[in-house]
Image 1 (cartoon, rainbow, N blue to C red):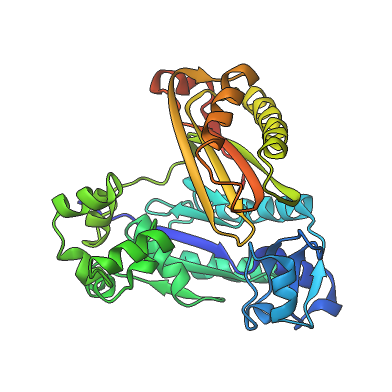
Image 2: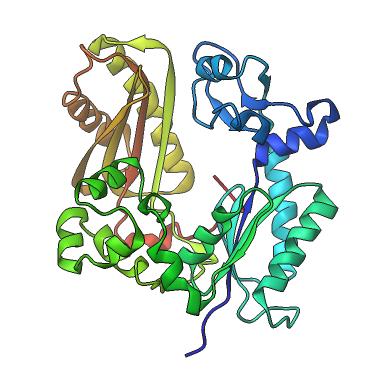
Length: 358
């Protein structure tokens, strides 16, 4: 069996780096892309800002406290999208098997590549060099025989990193990997794993499939495979949208259920418009609530009929909101999403992802 050659490219501090590239006065300084206001959130932080603990999705007020010299820069999404397309054009000179994950990262399958280059690491080096020379930006790259390991590798030596995980090195590498570095393991899952005395890839590999599926459901199979260096997922050029949603950060924290229902109506209206625009039909509605302290919860409900209209979604959204204790926990953000599309409907909205579309 021929092993695949997979590259994961991840742009370093993408939004912030573009702002520093386009404005020389910002170079070498701690900057945050976002709005400096009471309800503002940091969209991206430069590496200079990260040294102070500033991170994306952080409240602007907290970012300012951590870094008094922080410079806030308004985002320019159209510019970021254009640069993303330029990066995609570079990728396309090497392979057509490109799977965007977001606006600033993608997988490339270069097993069979347009340049006839034997080593994937040489392709990764060349792509990194071209991004630096042509776009004056920095990317990190991970190279391995599957998507899981390529993504882990790209994170390993950031910024401006290049890491290759060979098949004969993979198991030892995985065994020493903290579970927090595994794809799909967030804070909540990591905490649960720690409670089960699972701290590293080696600990995870010692767990049976039965145990992992018992505690982690379907994801247990994934963790079981990852711990053994197994990931058969292909690089998907045409990606099937699995969910569609929207969210609103409120102008002020709310505890009044009546006020929250009004906000929920506005979010639902926007969601319905998006569903129509993308011709998306799903059967599960998820309510996301973020509280004043930035903790968040989700509540979901599935239906037999697809969720497409205001009449379908709003009553269900209200029902989900009833399950949330808003009176004692002020709410700062409300989000709704529709997911779980039926297999026989997917052909109606199967679409080619735009480069790095977030």
